[in-house]
Amino acid sequence: MLLSNLLTPQRIRVPMAATDKSGALRELVELVANGSGASPEELLRAVLDREALLSTGIGHGIALPHGKSPLVNELRVSAGVAANPIPYESLDGGPARLFFLLVGPESEAGPHVKALGRISRLVRNDELRERLLAAPDAEEFYRLLRDAERE
Image (cartoon, rainbow, N blue to C red; front, side, top):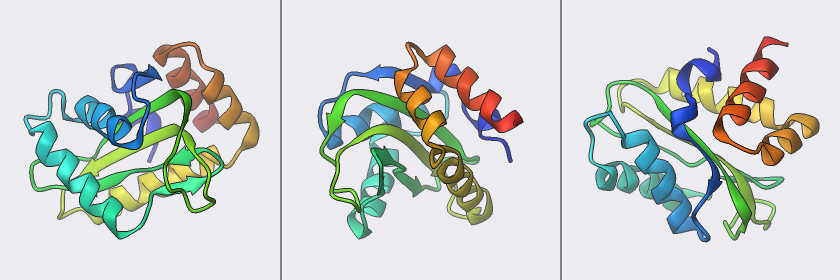
């Protein structure tokens, strides 16, 4: 599974307008919902329900919010870079700047888990993470991600 096949520059926001966790989740959900036929509010509820169980801030400035919803029939992914660190209740206590949000159908856990694993492996690379954070726009962010997957 290639993340660059699930993500498009149109679903990447660099820089994000959000300045807090709630705003970041809403902004990313709106990108995922666009063209899906699903209501952003319903998808946001799925993400917030998952977030209530345990923060999806994995540390090192990275957050991987995700949820499952019967309103989508395929895994949908969005990403963004916050202009400034956003308090996120991350596992390491730090704020987040690099976000990947996933919403998938309730019936298909496999692709959802594979995508989370793929993102996690990619952003553990310090050099790639720094390059993504420094990307000037969505197109460059996408290019960096696509190139990293080819290596």
